[in-house]
Structures are given as structure tokens and as C-alpha cells.
Figure 1 (tube, rainbow, N blue to C red):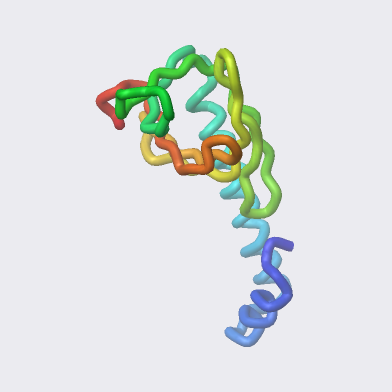
Figure 2 (figure 1 turned 180 degrees about the vertical axis):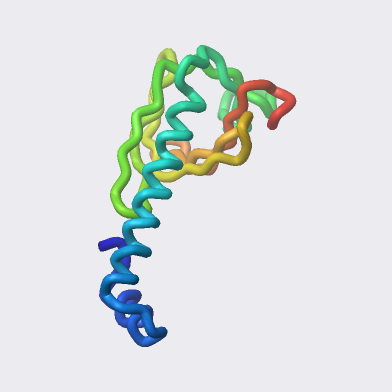
Amino acid sequence: MHFSSREQAALREAGLSTDEIRAASDAVADATEAAAEELEAFFDGRETVYSDMDRAHSSSDIQEHTVEYLDLFTHADDIRGYLRFDTWGVYVEGGRVLSEDAVELTLGPTVHDRVRFAADRDDL
């Protein structure tokens, strides 16, 4: 179940039954899975994307990336995975769809930041 034991106790105190808590937990997991699928679909078939990633050796505020793939998995409300660019990759530790043309991923080591990606420079 998605909710911790403390959260489950609080939800029971608020009047939810075990079945209602389980249904809410399932809804969270389903929403997380749907978000991961939307994030993967954003990158699928796009050779080039743009981001607001802070890069040490770049003077530009907008970066251009060649993306090979985004591979995500979910557990409860967690989205994790790996984003592979043409010459390097980075762990993904969360993400959300901002619009049809933009997404945001929380990237792990070596980036350690929330980064917006868009299909077009103007969408950043």
C-alpha cells in the first residue's frame, strides 16, 4: 500500500475504511503509472529536445540535447529511471508533465536539479 502506517492511521481517524484507503492508494499508483507513460511518450520519437539544464561549460540558458531514450519505472508514487542522451545519461528521480509541449524531470547525480524539457526552445 502507498500510505505509511501513520498516514493509514490518520486516514482511518478521518473516517476512511480500509477498503477506501486501499482504493485511494491504488488511485495514486495508477496516476503515477500514467504520468510515467506520458513522460516516456514525450521523449519517444523526438530526436532533439531543449532544456533549462544548468551546464558548467555552457554560456546559454537553453541547452539542446539528442535523446536516445527515457526508461522509467514506478513504485507507489515514485517515478524513477534513466534518461539517456547521445553521449551521457542521468538518473531520473521524479517527474511531471507540465503541458503537451513541456515536462519536468528531477535528475539525480550528476545534475541534482529539476530540469524542464521542451520540444521547442520557445516552450521553455
